[in-house]
Image (cartoon, rainbow over all chains, first blue to last red; front, side, top):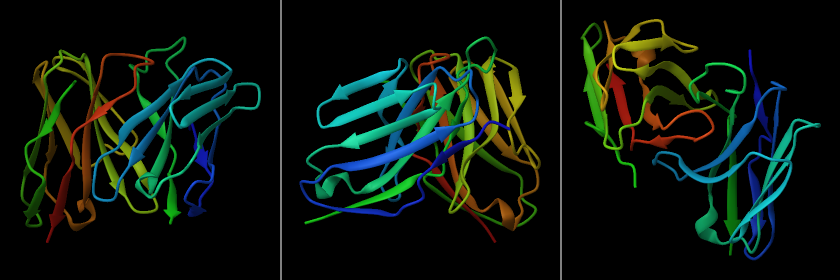
Length: 115
Length: 112
């Protein structure tokens, strides 16, 4: 069973701080990693994807991947109250197989940014 | 932008009813997925489809079936609804491996 684990949270940070969200995965052949944001009562929306070791930046968001440690993280700089949501880590283990892009999700980390 | 449309936002059904949840995507994606999301259990894959009339079971297929007669439409069927199928149901589509998903807005199903 492929597993994706996230720090359970909830995580509370003050406005303007850096929020750090962490995720580990069990399937060593995993090649593609995604972060989704889900507001309460809404469906998940894709905010970041990362495929190579290292950092990938998009605005205030930075995704970090370390395949040797089977670890992926999301940093949110200058956190805003509008960033308050559940963040889902998702892993695609399609490499070498036929999983058709099927994703395995972590249980999510609830982030609250307080003014 | 890819649009994934789920026909109902909220549904209330009675135990034993046959329930159809519809999902339509408008970007010619090959792969479509049905998940349910429950507090404390996260997103769990029920079924997915990689082509018309092709389907595979996910992690929790019991009590469900699916239909994909056209590429753009993927239906989830609850053969005989039970109260433990009360959940948020999310449909997603994907262009393929390593492409991530686009989700529909979800259907919150209550079985009474």
